[in-house]
Image (cartoon, rainbow, N blue to C red; front, top):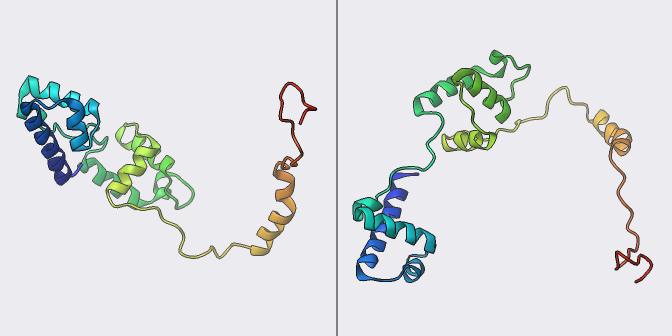
Length: 171
C-alpha cells in the first residue's frame, strides 16, 4: 500500500475516533464514512484500548515474500533468460518463475502472487511482436479442418426436453 493510501485510511479512522468521542453509534459512523459496520466495531475496540495511536496503520497485512533486495536478484536471474536455468525455450511463465524462486531463494510463492509481484514491480505480460518464421499457415489450417473435429467432443444436439424430471413424457 502506498504512503498516500495509508494516510488516507488513517484519516478515515481519525474521523471515526472523533465520532466515537461524540457518542455516535457504529451504524451511523459506518454510513457516514462509507465503511462496514464490522470495521467500525474493530476500530472502536482499538480506540478504547489505545486511543488515537491505537488506530494508526501497522503496515500492510501481507508482507511481500521477496524483499526489494531479493527481487533485484530475481530480476538479474530473469534477465539471464530461461535457457540459463535449464528450460529449452526463451519463455518465462509464472510456473517457471515459481520454480526459479523455489530453487534460488527456497521460498514458496503462489502463481497469482508471482503475477501480482511482477505487475507491482513494473513487469508486464509480453506477446510476440511478429509471427514465427517457421509457422506454416497451410499446415495449421489443415489441422483445424481435419484433426480438430476428431479431437473435439461433439456438441449435444438441441432437442426438446421435458419440463418434469419425474415424468419425462409430460410437456
